[in-house]
Length: 277
Image (cartoon, rainbow, N blue to C red):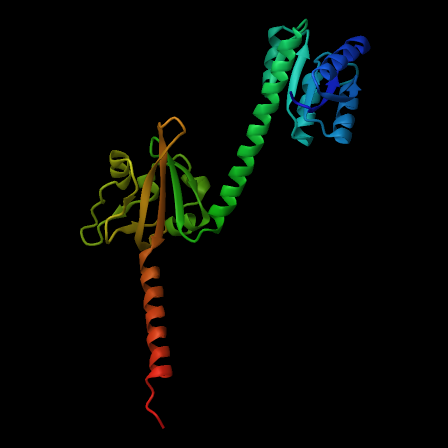
């Protein structure tokens, strides 16, 4: 049983008290009740609830739908509508606010508890996913290699900054475009397009490397020798959901390796192979 803190927004005092007692009997904390949208926003700012039970018909200038809209602009809190409003127009307005539940009065106590628990779990999952996405985005921004993601159709869904610099495409420009349009790779001698590594990666179900000598034709006209690999991505059910490619500038890598080798040879010859005085 959850011990979550819930804000009840209900303008009928007797109904609000009954809801408060029901919730407390379920193990939830209900430190405040609000009778209007304005009061609900104030209470939410003070108590930072884990969930809001929102009636739609409220006293004051704002109804429950508008109050929810304002609340979502200011707070990251799930809202469950608990209302007697069942008309289609109200339902459509409420749906646009993305509620975590919509219960009609009268309701069963077990139904209310189930809706609350599902809403709390769903919100917790969404918060975790957002945090993971933010962490992943920060990590990808810091990676020196170009990272490019495409969906199951082969359409671009993400470019990290290194990929934008290499391809000459901004992420905004590339989104939704075909992978091979953004990352055209050709044979440096014949200029013929090389075999699509995504096709091989999907066919074999594993990471597939680019052909040796691959040349990337960037949007700005640059021709970049590239190395790297592409891998198919599968969801938790084992269904194919897209690709991720990691590319690096082959010329830059070879230059760095040659520089290291030259410096190493110079250091060794100076330190260990000088003629004795």
